[in-house]
Amino acid sequence: MLAVIRILFIALVMLTAFPFVILYCLTRPRHPDLVHQIGVLIAKCGRFVGIDVELRYLSDDIPDKAVWIANHQNSYDMFTLPFALRKGVVSIGKKSLAKIPFFGQIYWITGNILIDRDRRSKAADTIKQAAEAIDKRHLSVWMFPEGTRSYGRGLQAFKTGAFHLALQAKVPMLPICCSSTHGQVKLNRWNNGKVIVEVGKPIDVSQWKENLRAEITQLHDTMEQRIYELTMEARGEAADYQEVHKKQVELNQATVGEQA
Image (cartoon, rainbow, N blue to C red; front, side, top):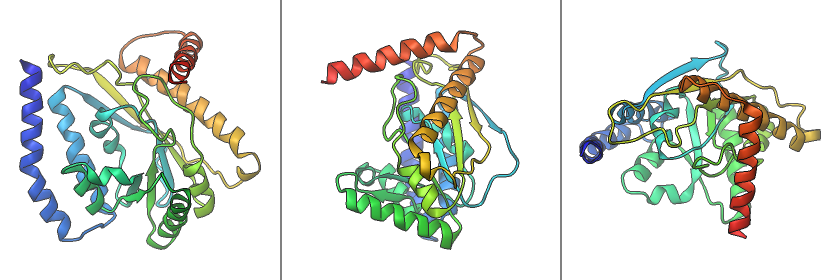
């Protein structure tokens, strides 16, 4: 019963707020600060599903221009990750997002960048345009290097788009690690525990071009372990990362085998 009430309440809040959000965005459409303002507003709805988000910064020196990257888990990301947003940060997402009722229209009007993944030439051109926007408009761009939600499969392999963007724009990377929410949220209970969102230190990638794949793999592994550590801390547990990592690799391999 609680789950039904929560879903209906969140839907009612969003439907009621939608026209006001649109009207506000129309006063300065696609302004880069809108992503921060509307993103945090949506994230606050996470309180209605019993999530307590703790935000951490490992550095006070957050660059005005950077490529932000984070792990992409599930739909609950919209209630956790936006708390890390700052003014001047926009995201890059699939063009199909614009077709989602309400969310898609807000995603576009707040100034996010949409790419067509089915056409590599367009995607490459978008990366070029994003690099120019970072330089000329002093923007930061938020991306999910996994390219898709993980749904409890752990941190998936990184695609190279975000890193090529950072190299092309000559800006640092800013890693964001969010503790796992997989299996944590139960809509039929009041308290769904704590989620930790940690904004890491800026990473200089200017010398990565010569050994890009190896550098990406190293960053992936570092973030994977940190996400695990944050998850254990958020849940008040202690476990062996190496053992969990081994099981996660086996799960991913089994998933790939089933898909084949």
